Length: 468
Image (cartoon, rainbow, N blue to C red; front, side, top):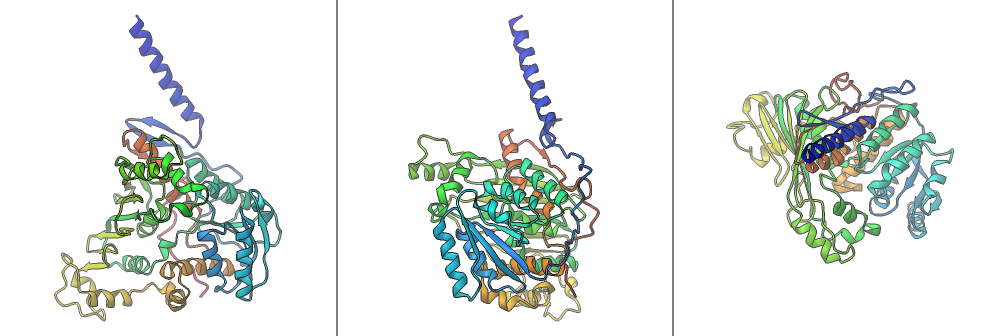
């Protein structure tokens, strides 16, 4: 009898857990050994942001929040971009604000209004002379500040990842749809020259049908942990399983697959190693006490799309290894990868009639560096043709930061749809929670939410809008 009571109690607890999950419109239930996330209906006062274009802005007035490593670098770059001005800057610390004011003066730019302290961002967002709020703060603050900015009539651009939970992803989507304000995640790796050229080659059919893609963030952060104010990044890794920084890897390959522009990510499975180096790194810092470090030294995530494509994403930030974003494209007619060495493998049939010496090409091995460089030059993405030289001169991760910021201001200035929309921000950032939930349930498959609410196939491929 006692055994039966225990079984009934366990069943009741399980039912209660399912009931609680159902009560959360953005939560999940477990069905047929899968974690199934909810996709709630769009409220009546919201509209889809697919293809959304705001009114043109003659001179984009910018407020910066966060002036540390990324923020100060972005301010530096934007002083080289036309049709915009920096109206206000904000940071937790006054000395950072003063340093940016000095930079602006050295560049011959007008002094910006300065704010500091924990709620200085609110004063900045409440100004009526700002069009765009640019966020470069710790991950945990991205969504709350972005929502506040949109609620106060501002477009927002957010460093990566834009959100750290599914609830935050939906907060960004719902607020953007309700306020009709752009919400762009600043995924700079989508603007790398190699990735853009491969995207153009994919769109021209050189790789045939894309079957499998790979991306990653593999970067030993040992020299950098001390640079994160309050140790926030190590703390986040200490407390969380999963791919906590997925967007550098997933962003470019989602564009290659036209995610929510003809295809969608459906099912995800994540698995991680133990935290061998991670635990040692946390112990060596001696500031956490006796803790168990959560984030595995390597996290691998497999995703299958609605149209039968597969994606592999990896995260590794504590073990010594060469930097890699993997970036790999496998198609029915060819192959490309950027790391560890840039390589193309294409058959001659795909290149007939092109201005390239294609003799003896076979997709089973890499073409020569000379052939690769000639093809990459020929298929350079037209979007960067006019700005490549300036991008390389100004810099920012080899120029891709400049291209990203240039495109953001260009689209706002001309009243065009942005290259990355709020659904990109939500989809790519959603891996932060989804991978952790999968790992915490023994690498159980996760049926991913649809942030477009059924409109993932309403747009025919990714495009970069121009005013021409």
